[in-house]
Image 1 (cartoon, each protein chain N blue to C red):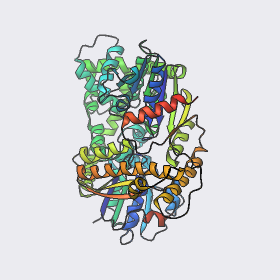
Image 2 (tube, each protein chain N blue to C red):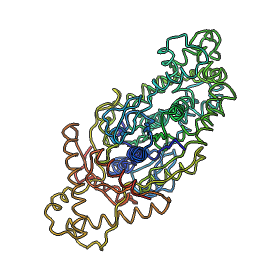
Image 3 (cartoon, rainbow over the protein chains, first blue to last red):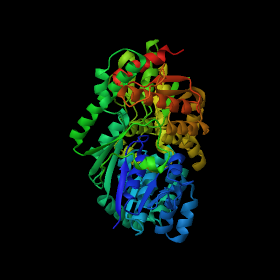
Length: 333
Length: 274
């Protein structure tokens, strides 16, 4: 059985780096894959590979493999796996398919979840660490299978009457007042094209719902790690993850506080004598250290989950050794 | 120009910059609306309000504050755009259109941007400052008119989207907020390289550290380490700032956590910058 660890958090908190650090730690003992989403090129270099692709590649560390999410390929896979062959080909070249897979809010998140399950059920890995897409972080990731199901089976389909007339038309339903309004506001061209597209997409429904059940089963068994910095926006998101995650998400196991100023500086700042530039500098950092200390304490008590701190560094790590040493001594998951 | 769009990567300080720009304009006597494009952001807290509604509420310095919520904006959109009186219940129509808006490409974005333009054209405001979606998502809003043009050859929504494109080109400018770090700079450069349908107003770097006037001493005392860290970060920040020419710089505020304290300090800095 493959163990799955999902790493969630707002964009810009160092989630990708933390995911790599966690994966690197597991790779000391287990065959581990880290799946990252749109990583900085620097991370690929740090992992010892030129470019991350959709296919897992071995990094500079023996048991550590890495893959990047290839979103277009994932959606094409959904069409090819779950729709009849001719419909799949029609879907893939349909401009709505391209537009929707690119911009449907849950699209990237679903692609990541689908990818995760393919690897988790492949039998190749002891551990998989997933770095989730940043858009709206973890909430979107865990809600994405349901959102995709809604898209494929949703309200729009029933109002547009898709499936009633060989899945291809607006006929019959066109007389309802709501559809007349929609035609007046949006124009009938858009509605007709959309109905045809949704009709094709609906053929994936049966296959997709099996897949969604599979994804949600992997979610339920996974370990959840939340990453945040002390900036207000990521902190608010981290709190939301801890309290408002959809039912399919597991209970968070660990909160990683990234970019922590040494707490000893708060005390040192109070004791320092003199008013030169170095003393003033230490007092500024001391203020920041005590703000962080207070926040960390209130987070730990209000969330009731374990906290691990990663110290502030002037730049993100550029080699595997540094990444491996990011997590504090005795880190356990 | 009476619409200022503020965008940038998530977490760089878009809301506080939106608040500061709105406050500066309001202090000079303008009628200003600060509008949050996505509900539930931090804009209200930076303007002295604990809650922001879809209808304008008065915040500090006389700035009016509102946020766009889709059901609300949708209802307004339907009322304004239906050529005939709506015979089905409005609530039912809104529910259907909301489902449609998350499915049909461009529709959700057109409704949101349409609301911004509706406010700007209302005659109530000299300036509308918009706290926009993060750069990653914002391009889908800015490019919604093009998305619609490619998918729909004619019809009402097509006309609407053409109107939005013209309005953005003539009346809106965009300001990017960034941090002097790798990912925000790379993301801002990528956003700027796209074919943005409105004028670029400025790039603002937030959370800058000031160089120390003396050399950082060696050693591992807190005094030395804090100076070494400051030096190292200042060097990194200079490296990333060199990649992206900016017009304004805002300082990192050590130990500040109250949103109004941050808003007051950064408004003063921005107002004092020529």
